[in-house]
Length: 233
Image (cartoon, rainbow, N blue to C red; front, side):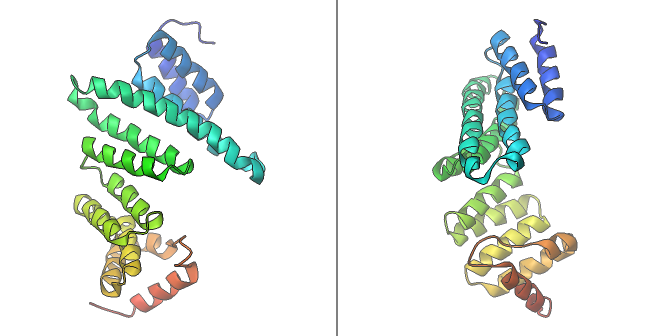
């Protein structure tokens, strides 16, 4: 299928395959690009995404007891490819500053893969590195804030990151995330304020919001919303 010697065309074919969910053929295409152009960080990045997306495409067909092993296989392959893309991009940005945002995105991709591998230290490191290259991306602050809140049990640092994200781009998701952090930090007044701010931005999102942490069950969240609606600050 990939008898062409034009890496740009093969990469474009690979992107179409990836977008259409044909992950195995996409992996083959990006591998061919890498064979022809070993410094193609785009090919490494997209091959990594193909491995990660492949897992999600087949997860429902895998027996529960097999999922961890299959996830380990595909996410590990994803991380290897993101590693290589980062290695190349770090050299590229020394000459082309414009690739910094792409490097930040690859760090985010690797952080997400590492999260599924339960490598929390690597997740934190990847998100922090992403911010070094794109400090104006609010999504990175939200992801790191969620890590602080859900996995590192540090609501104060979570609040700091959510606040930074809000300063860049206020959103219902950001305000609700900080609301949860305020609740877990024992600051009900600020939690209610953020809850109401989130409602003004996207009432449907707020209505459907739930916490997954065991200490804050869905029923408790519904009770909080009911009480918060009757308060004003």
